[in-house]
Amino acid sequence: MKKRVLVAMSGGVDSSVAAALMKARGYEVIGVTMTLSPSQSQAAPASRGCCSVWDVTDAEKVAWKLGIPHYVFNLRSEFEQHVIGEFVAEYASGRTPNPCRRCNQHIKFDHLLERAQALGAEAVVTGHYARLRRHPQGWVRLLRGKDQRKDQSYVLANLSQEQLARVRFPVGELTKAEVREVARGLELGVADKRESMDLCFIPDRDTAGFLAGRLENVQPGEIRDRSGRVLGQHRGLPFYTVGQRKGLSLAGTTPRYVLELDVVSNALVVGEDRELLELAMEVDELSWVVPVDHSRARVQVRSSAGGAMASLEPLGPGRLQVRFDSPQRSLTPGQAAVFYRRHEVLGGGTIARVLR
Image 1 (cartoon, rainbow, N blue to C red):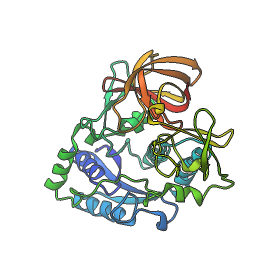
Image 2: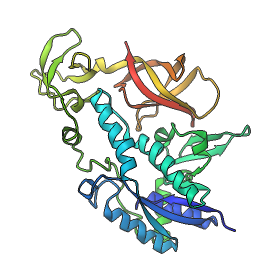
Image 3: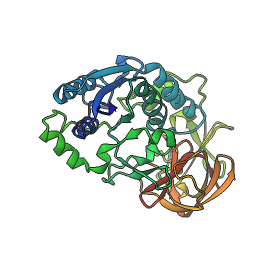
Image 4: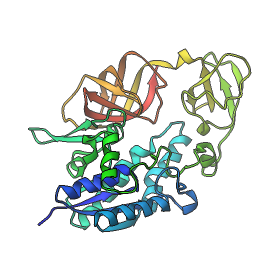
């Protein structure tokens, strides 16, 4: 009897090839597409993002081509609660969230795993560029994908051992070019489909406009430099993030960047580019993939960066201090901090604050 797996099919080339690979390996494959946006008016158009009606149609076509069943799961309420709600709350508190990370944690590898169990599937399969290995002592190792440019282990670091044991990432063993070639060979119709780069619930990229429609009691305040000198007025802290340069409307020829969102005094602190460099930060919401203590690691603080070496010092349950060997740019509270040993994920957490 074939083992059954549930494949999360977004309508893109990666998840489509993931489904094809699992079928070729002899699994009974069930394709599912999740509807997540609160309403169709907020779903991405055909040429942008993911989760649109066109993407559902693409997933259905691929499933038909592969000869596998396909279902659509409505997870809008769960997505609203765990992803959009937290996204808005984090901005309101002066932090910059990573919604894709939360979607992986709470939607794809939480609610979807529950659905998989109800359907008798042993695992959930996705098109993430990451790799899994079983350690001789029993735990599941999480490694960067073969294609370093597409590696997505950064947004998977907060998955638990229980979750990692029940997921599969078949395209993690391939490069993006190889994935597209597989899709062409199988005539799946999505081989050259554009990648989704935007937030699925903000397809027009207007984060400020999205937040303006959901936040209440946002107050304007002062824009200051580190010395406390007032340089201008901001429209509300949730509309800014660390490292931002555009949209400050400040006089003068010297470029200024957002350094800090001071929620207590409702002030936006700005400065020169060199002032974005910091050496240390505090990380909370810790989750360890490798169940041993670590005092040194390569720490990655954004999805597109390779990370930098740092010392790790425990501060108490679920918290530690990260001190980099060299200054790092734009350490941003709310973003993920992921710890690596070469290509292996040791664990991760959330940047709580910058230590100065």
